Image 1 (cartoon, helix red, strand yellow):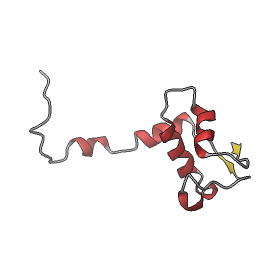
Image 2: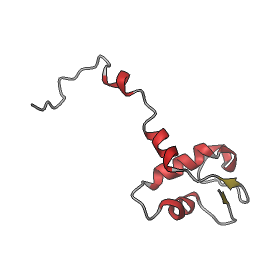
Image 3: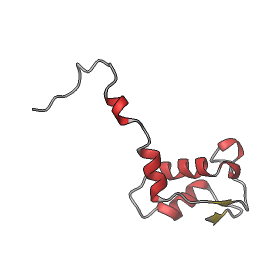
Image 4: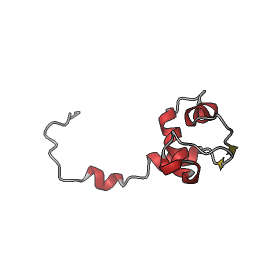
Length: 88
């Protein structure tokens, strides 16, 4: 949990939380907004409310975000695959 202070920015919060990792800060900011909609005016990361308590995304939040798609149906769609690269 983190309490937003006057002068904080979403990018600054994301950088403090995950700046020393290889996780893209854009993903961190996207998750912060989606997990804390009441802390942002119209879900806009540029309009953050001071004194709101937000949750910082965990590793499990990233996993849920990145691996939530139905990969079986994505791979079995009837799409033109003539331009795909084939490996022996």
